[in-house]
Amino acid sequence: MRFATGSAIGRYPPRRVVADWATRLGETQYMAVETKSIFCLEGDWSRSIKSRQSVEPLLQLLQDCGATTYVHRDVATRAELNHYLDRWLARGMTRFKIGYLGFHGSRHTLHLSRNESITLSELADELTGRCNGRLLYFGSCSTLAVQDSDLQDFCRQTSARGVVGYTKDVDFVESAGFEIHMLTDLLRATNVRSAYNRLRKEHPVLTTRLGLRMAHATWASERSVAINALK
Image (cartoon, rainbow, N blue to C red):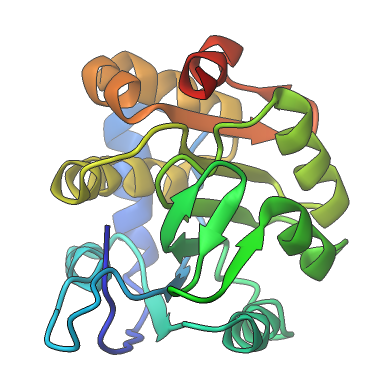
């Protein structure tokens, strides 16, 4: 998947835009009060120093369209990850409801660089009790190809509103296209399970091919997706 090069933050889109979304969609699960923001941490996707592969253009598109504002930072070590997680969870950052972790991945693991990685269990230890009201999106291959209890335990330990990610290896361009739809939905949704059901209904091919997985403290989506990914 992706490679990051910079950072940005923009002003809030008007509240009227969010209200218009909710009215147009007729969806009571959407927030119509204040636009939520995304805090993105991204690793290297390529060994080439010249590579410009990154998810940031996707975030910039969403911001330019008035869907969100965002912060983007490059991360390659555990120390950098912990530093920026602390920044994300600091006072004054509560509007950043989605934490986007864009890295190479494998089952239960994020690979920050060629030499450093972190497991879901280790990440949960770093975030214990600190993610109240926040959603973590793992933009990485196969990281959520784990049992229901692992995801639910992660949410309970961290107090996260939910986790989102994939159970399979995913194509960069294909997943980026899907993320425009998914992040737009998650930014407006107040119910993780309802958001999952909408995405499955509206994008059945992509959600199956990518192995979309979502969970909160008492629920996890379609266990069969994770079981098939583990085979």
